[in-house]
Image (cartoon, rainbow, N blue to C red):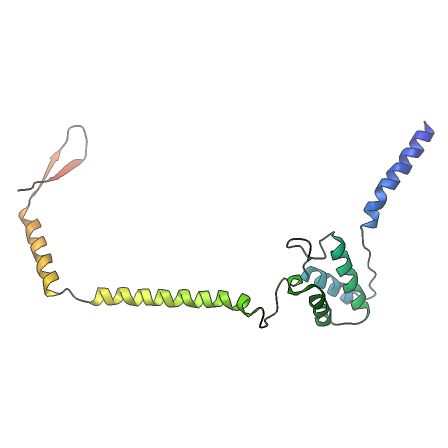
Length: 175
């Protein structure tokens, strides 16, 4: 019985080794450097994972990127230098907020252009409606309106109560 429990403990220890190997421990002497590491790994996107930072990803490439960030921080590089290195190596995709450059101008400019276009369209529609409302009726339109109003005045509406319903029913009498 004692042998079985020893073998069971060895088996459990062997199975838990991969879980221990996945935990990365980074030593920082300076808490500011450690915060920069956290900020950078939260800012960089994993190229393999969909919409996940390298700080949250378990993929091997994210682990490699975290190691590179750590090494460069230990070498005294600035955040901009580290980000430039990562962009040079992996492309603009690793940045959650792409930089404003010639290649990304459409990405940044298109939403603003669509907002401006929407505002211009609203202004033009409002002005067109005001112009139509401000314009008076022509003589033909006025005569047609007068004839319709006079014709309606000649007809009388009759109101009677339907015994099946409590509301009065209106019927127009055509002559």
